[in-house]
Image (cartoon, rainbow, N blue to C red; front, side, top):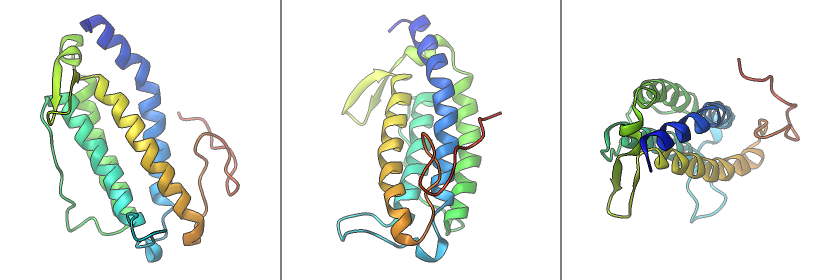
Length: 168
């Protein structure tokens, strides 16, 4: 991938990255704190664990793109509720995304190793971020009604909520 292609790919993904972040925040915020340990099956993660996994994984991918280094972020003790996860997610994402937005085409095109599994241009991991988060967010959104929560709109109105206002 050339630096020009990498920069163009990033510009193409930018609006989607912004939209998906806002959607993920809404889904995590919908988790009732008193039911956050809900799991539909013994093999499934709890809603709380799944929400943390989404938030932390996105930061790992952003950090990987920005620095080329794999980062495993343990959950801070201060991040105890779904509201805490949303706050942490927003704060961390702001800093990590700002770092990614400053990258040059050359930096976005550099090959980054993902723990020996993939060696791809840095910008390609933003697509992994989107797919990974969408997958787990879908799982989490399916937990909401059994927990007694309302499902927020994701790509259109949900059965519980109308269409959100367009982002500003």
